[in-house]
Length: 469
Ligand code: NAD
Image (cartoon, rainbow, N blue to C red; front, side, top):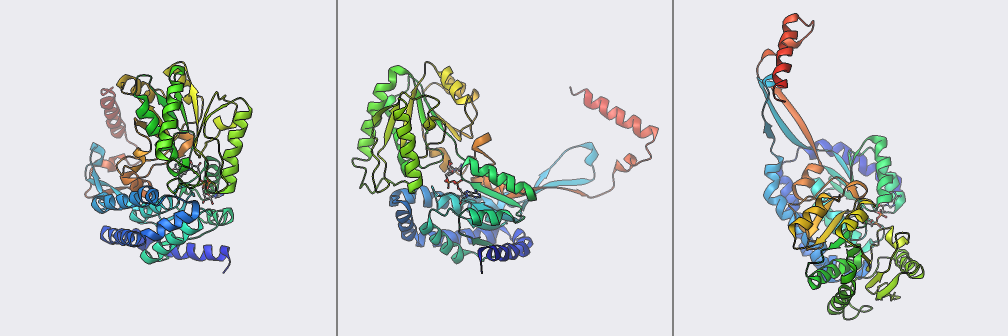
């Protein structure tokens, strides 16, 4: 069967099944999530090997950033899903006497999940399981750059679900394009902003709802009174997990000029402490492919040849690893300050004041997260209220993403929609408004032809509402 026929056949199979899937109960869905968890833990070594093979990711980082978030999500859903699925009664309004009103959380229907390569296990599996928990059928199209991870994901889904519930379709842009021709009810996309725009355009053909989990340049602001050593260590850690190939990695740092030298020295020390060697260090991931390696090398070289100063690093090894690199003396017109870096290169900008830092953030697209390192509540709230971003994290990088009780998503160009925990359940649900008339009450008097008596009652109601002003 060619790819087009394979896609049509799976889509039709899931379309036929969507009402059955929608009406599955919490017990069934939780039992499947638990089965997935068991299968995943049983195959933990295979998952680690797959990520090693795709981009030399350290086993411990695979456990921490790919497997554990999925376990934590499933555990949370095990506890909460039943109560989330219950219809929620709502009250109120004289016009509704004789009715019962409630919100029914129902599946959206047939979902398409398209995922990226950078956390290829977690970012494929997490949205699929969320959509499943909300009663949807799902086709997953993972990134073409992580074939080994895709194989293990496919195996785990086949061990857990029926194809009419969850199916994996592999391939590159051609596969995405063929899938996007189908009238899905919901599309959950994680990837770059330019591709996000294509997804939204294609979804508009069938008016599928979309969640777009995109990227951007996440800034870091350091308060001059904060402990610089703590900040440097935490920023270096957040930047170098997955070798900087993290959507919420600190993209660049802003601080006052007088702190620059000390900060760079502290970053250098932390890099040395975390990764004494780079090229053959199994704790340090490689760049996913030659294209991205060349892109990062190009960004660095262009910045240096345009006047940026290389403070730390700058070595690009043949095995795909890049030495943690710090640049200063940057200008806005350099490409590295215009696109998401998505690699272990950290520009450090100096600004005169926090006002200038806020202004700099606001003159660019909304980031996925803004990081602030400060002990001063006033400083923190000033930055928060004066900027926009999907998340806001104080004195800690990356961790906010791991919480199943915080929503995760972007704002503006960094994304549309939210997931994780209850927010994911709502994102994947059709939140249906239900009104049930239980007995006749006075609404009949509203039917035409409109009489003088009706008009005067409506006028009285408006006058009464006006008195609330
Ligand atoms: P990408 O946009 O290139 O690809 C993502 C997916 O879209 C892949 O499955 C790919 O095959 C598919 N795709 C690529 N071009 C397409 C097209 N023209 N039409 C349809 N589908 C297409 O992203 P990537 O390089 O895999 O991932 C890196 C980007 O993802 C970064 O920008 C990063 O910030 C972002 N990201 C965001 C989050 C988040 O949760 N917000 C998480 C991880 C990564």
